[in-house]
Image 1 (cartoon, rainbow, N blue to C red):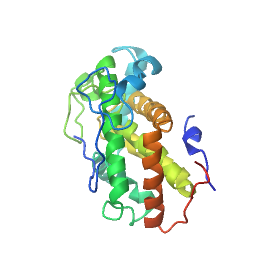
Image 2 (image 1 turned 90 degrees about the vertical axis):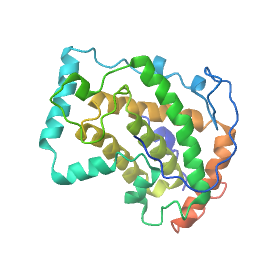
Image 3 (image 1 turned 180 degrees about the vertical axis):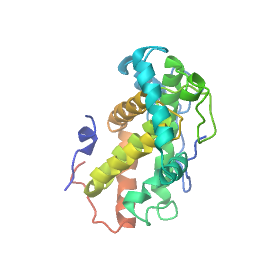
Image 4 (image 1 turned 45 degrees about the vertical axis):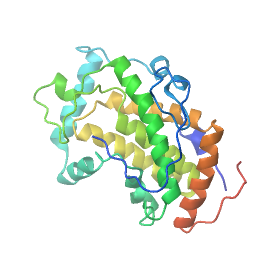
Length: 249
């Protein structure tokens, strides 16, 4: 039965790509050089929607930083391996939940669809990071040694976490039978950025909110919806699940 998991959800980077990618259109963006597939940055002004990150040197920022320090000190060898693996920004990391058939080879159209979604989402996140311009944990505390290649790009919101929730919401709408585990996996994806020493916990929460807001715009775009339904049909067929048909269109 179809469920409205998009609304239930409100409470370097690598993308594994293959298959066809539709031609992009030039949208009415703030930056006319930006290519948008479904939505453009001017449609999602996270600068106005997100609370600002904790002020550098404030008590709240100190707690945020202490959480990163503790996560790094307490991480197990298994957690370290998982955190390093989740540095790859790929929708196919969700194969942990969706199973071994969830691969680019089995999903030529959906893979291109996910790539287009990511291309739009990252433009929104880039402009938001630039607005808040928060330094990363290892830039605040030189004693921190991030597991992944240190990037001095702004920290807030977490791009990996935003990506994880954008994809989780879409996947939960494709495979509502596994919505709970899909969202659990997105939460793990985000927390692993803290374990890796790349982000503060408040960056992760902002990423969760950002992903939800971005998807609320995607799901009101007709071009997105047309491709979503086609990608969903392909995903469900690859996973051996019954078609959802037109019941929620």
